[in-house]
Length: 119
Image (cartoon, rainbow, N blue to C red; front, side, top):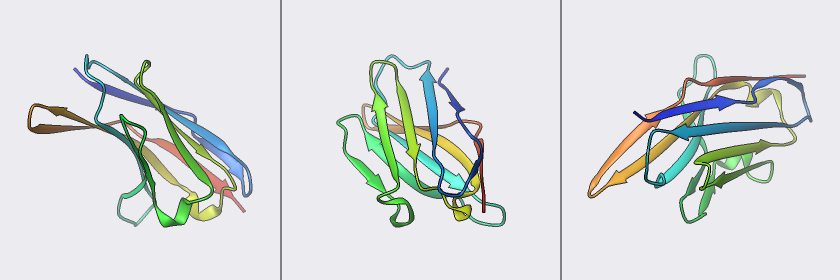
């Protein structure tokens, strides 16, 4: 059974940095893509950043230049390096993984980790 476990959230002042980690287990295959989403109170969940097994990355416009996503395929772990944090980055951050088996995509979610940025 696939499990995603996030860590690294917390409280930080505006302008500070945090690194989130998401360790995936339960799959013998490398995940096709691993992503970070976030959901602020009263808002929809949004994609923050994603990275494929080949290393291709994509970012939401609001975090470009401030956040960096990386992954260690050997450890099935994805990281989100968050710099120059702003109060608007406050949200629960969720790890998401997509696993392709033949022609079917399976999606998995972590439990979320809270990030709070104080002004």
